[in-house]
Image 1 (cartoon, rainbow, N blue to C red):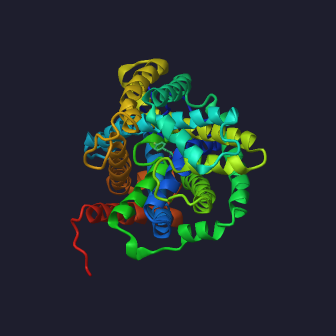
Image 2 (image 1 turned 90 degrees about the vertical axis):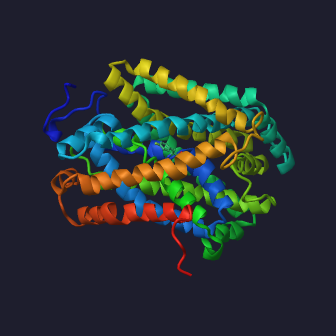
Image 3 (image 1 turned 180 degrees about the vertical axis):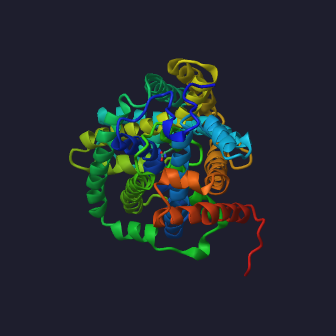
Length: 463
Ligand code: PFF
């Protein structure tokens, strides 16, 4: 039995240390939330799913599903104070219910490994763009040349693999050193800097002459052309961007001091994450239209639009280098959190050091990543189910595993845990608590289930 396994949740401590303050926790979760999901993924899935209606559903999912899931994860993490598998097992037992809920934690760990396997490949892509920006490659060139550079990079499995390897090495390095050291400082600087640069880019997008078009694309909903698969993608995006549904936030919650307000921290994280994603869209779509690009271009969209913006801008070499450095940092702080549940599990379960656990899990993820590395070149025509290996991993994790994990997490917090336990963590049973409980017990689980069933065509339409 672990020495920290006190029967009184308030007396439990984490084996991995604690955040130094409330702000440190908010910064760490923001660092996890803000990443490639905001700048890379949000614009391209919005583009692929037709814009406006998708964005509205995404926002609604953040508010009524994402928020209660995030609060549930944090409260469970803080109460259990260990890795997600052990936390759910302990809390299940404590509530006098099944300990098999630990399987939800296990699914989260697997999801984290799979997500990081391709996240790291895109992180490597960002790193490559840092290098290209710094040497001035993007200076004063047009869309055709930028597309050639992107396709040339993606076409070379050894280059994509090399940068994936560097990115993974950086991630293993930080995780091995411990959660707080370095992370807090990095995020404190990175999020405001990223925000500032996005605002500079927004100014540029406004001056592109196609801002109205971009704005209309993002906010004029056309529900007629929306499919249930797009709704599923919007919900998946909400989970992905907030880092919820797989235990990352639960693992971070395990290091949270007792007195911090969970609802306040969740709201701060969700708000800053959403602002950055919307800003990214507002920057990218006007540029897409100004340059006659296709909004549905897919995963490479920002890797064309952004260099294009910088190539035409005064001081573009400087700005694009800074921008891609910041994006790499943002990806890095998210990657760390994707590994945390698995690493915490190995440390606790097998009594290993953080460094050993990080290297072990990191190597596994690195090797899995080659499935994605090859999806853009050698195995680009190897397609099944949803497309390439990357497409399948992406769909399986973001659109299925995260919402499913999230649904089971809110069911656990809302139905398995008793009122006293959750009220205790959420600071009493006032209006915020009642709203959380209603969303966690009813709205979120039913909403997620409904979208799942609709997307696979199991619910008939009424019209
Ligand atoms: N939220 C991150 C992003 O938007 O880039 C991705 C992510 C991190 C997803 C951690 C899930 C997670 F657990």
